[in-house]
Image (cartoon, rainbow, N blue to C red; front, side, top):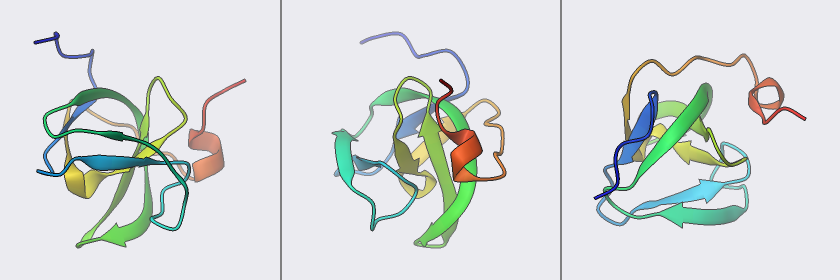
Length: 91
């Protein structure tokens, strides 16, 4: 098993995994996925579409992709971004 990424990171808890989205919405394009138990670095979070009672979405640290927090348990403090554009990758 690979070592956990540095904090903050998320662990996929959904038994069927989670889709990676271009924006924090299920209407957004799926650009990848993570399987159950996968660990991934988190850059920031925003309040966006409500998924089963949870409005938090995480931006991945190493990829311009979003995951619904409903399906990911976070470890460490994930900073809140005011909007999606500011939360996006720099450059």
